[in-house]
Length: 421
Image (cartoon, rainbow, N blue to C red; front, side, top):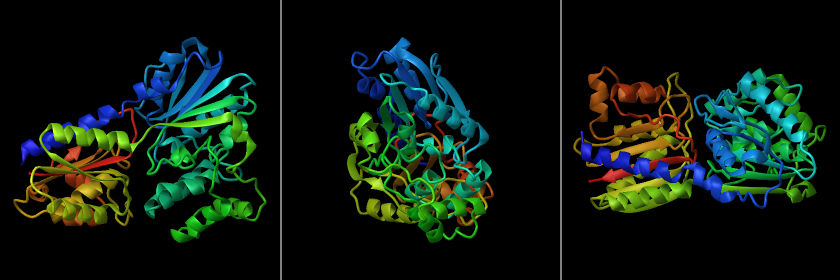
């Protein structure tokens, strides 16, 4: 096992995570001297607990109310802002109850007060507030079907926003007449405000008609619950209120600020790679596509590079689930790459989610090399069979090639590293 390269990959990964620390990002964005004397703080997302703690350190007693929803295990020791844990990526009843409390708290804001909203990736699933007659269980089933069909975050959110009471700018609508400032940690390629956490305080360009088209395109229109189809069809026919669009005057009192994105991660990774003596080759900050196909493409690119090069990419791939196993997009990428590696090939590959979670697992991703397939085989696993079954978690566990970081309290897309010796 090429320990030196694996150690280097881990060091680059740690440097990238350090650059995504939300505390200085939040502190820099807030100016206590210019903020109102009464602030209500709400939020949702995997990194929003850490964001809330940082906001408390700046605003202190100005905070008169606060509720932030985080993924299980992603808490922080806040005092004035209540943190609630909820289910992700599939919404649950805890998230639904918290979302409705957030809506009530935002509606209670008065003129002259500030609603500070803290948004990070995962926020959409963590705050389900289904629009009647859709139930939480029906929204959960729709989410599962779309994830299993390989829906992108944009496609998934177009549907979820139109099944929600608060997403797609509807939270900003509910906050009238208070001023709204949202601090946004972007986990979406290109930082589209209407997509990150389904854009609760941003104008929404998607429509009911587009949500219907997503179900058709992904082949799940006939499988989602009847109430979901009816809600989206009614909206497309103009029988339900659309989400607020660009140009709506309600956004004159709303300010959305992206305080961090994937550029922080990949730039820090490149700097650390150079410090370790590698030539840093930054491919893209907007990597997308089917994980196993992207893995083959990046591997071909890495093979063409000179020795002592680190190929770096940021973004987020997808997985079309056809098997019954456990895994995530980064684990899928890693195992697909491992299967392509030739014996003795001098490449070490790391793929991981900066939030510390890859799919519905406790791993951030995987780190593989030319010995990965053989190590898994010695433990009784078949790399090809496990990849075909989308059971990458089981294989990488057997090969001792899972990358676990635990909750990172940041969320800035994924990092992909290919180190060539």
